[in-house]
Amino acid sequence: MTRTVYVNGDYLPEDQAKVSIFDRGFLFADGVYEVTSVLDGKLIDFAGHAKRLQRSLDELQMANPVTEEELLAIHRELVRLNDIDEGLIYLQITRGAADRDFVFPKDPVPTIVLFTQSKPGLAENPTAKTGLKVISIEDLRWGRRDIKTVQLLYPSMGKMMAKAAGADDAWMVEDGHVTEGTSNNAYIVKGNTIVTRNLGTEILHGITRAAVLRFAREAQMVVEERPFSLDEVQAADEAFITSASAFVMPVVEMDGAPIGSGAPGKVTARLREIYLDEMRKAAV
Image 1: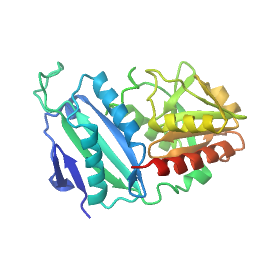
Image 2: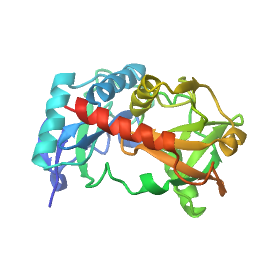
Image 3: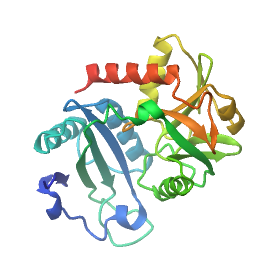
């Protein structure tokens, strides 16, 4: 079945969708993106993603071609047209097409593209019962990781490094401390304390991260937002990641050594349960 996608105001079959070869997203990775999950046909934390999208655009002095209300309508229409019950909606906005020049073009017309990915069983991912294996790699990305740009080559390389090592993902390390995963925020648990990197330019300001930390505090868990080392990972009782597509997912091994018991922990399982329950209630 051919998906219906959205390109610059039009809903089109995916094989008819086109973007200019002069688009700066293609030539310079001059663009930003968001991924919103769909559960039970409804959008998870849409307002959070829309707010972060606007922040990313503002940081790059890029115009938003749609209002938040229009963006919500587009998301809902794509869910309807593609009959998505569980899945993802990918959104990308670039500065638009212009003659190739490093200098930003004057008064460009942004390009906006959205498409869906059907993911049946997204919320019941069996990996939540077994956990992920990760490796550590040097963080070689640019310094503005707080902007959700389409510059994803190094994270993609990191995924391939993990695959070559027989692992599921990589956690990136800078100055001896974990920054984040290739496409997720990283956490360790020691006792009743959850530790995750504090917000800054070094990591993406995760929308799922914000919700999970809020729920953790409401559940009387202790949260420390600070850098943590690889030694702390190995000494932790549990570890996990969060992202829009994985929600809360346990990590059971780092660089070939088990974390804690080597099995998903109770804190991680409880946070995943709370997150899915609360997000389903608030979905739009």
